[in-house]
Image (cartoon, rainbow, N blue to C red; front, top):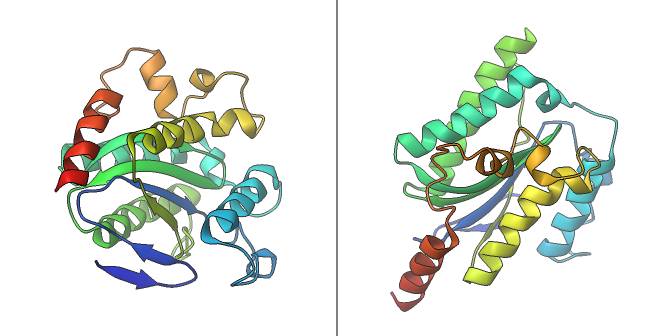
Amino acid sequence: MPESRRRLPHQYPPGKWLFVTCHLHGSLPHAKFPPPGKLSAGAAFVWMDRYLDSTRSGPRYLAQESIAHVVVASLKRGVVRGHYDLGAYAILSNHVHVLLLPKIAPSRLLQSWKGATARQANLILGRTGETFWQAESYDHWVRTEEEWKRIVAYIEDNPVKAGLVQLAEDYPWSSASQRAEGAETSLGAADTSVCATRIEHNSKG
């Protein structure tokens, strides 16, 4: 099982859906991160996400419509190129939640996606050679259909919990909004029946 390590372990079982959270460089000061070993990976993620939702300090570039558009367009481009199926996403002011089914090595996928969006965002911001994304990302592979459904709900409800909208479908930079509009979204396997079939197949394989 391929694995890389920075602050948290990153395990990538082949053929599994992956829940990924990326945040902007400097949005989560190192001094504020829970000490290693004090919390489980899951508890550390909850702490991190609550902090990112509530903080009004640090970079918030993703709140700019032009940059949010870059991130969404890049996510859809990855689907078209066959790099992954896209289950759900939400672009917040300083972090991004994505649920995807990798079709290439996840480490390569994330490196390519973060590099492309960083270059375009920095052009919009008029920055040169500045770090855009934090190198560390949180990731968790999905074990069951029920967990997949819970993660989709968590992602799409995040803008509501952050106090940005009252209804998930009212937030424009999320998969919930696109489904509410009835758009052809290229959300590879956002249909839970398709997801259930794939999870069952993977568990038997």
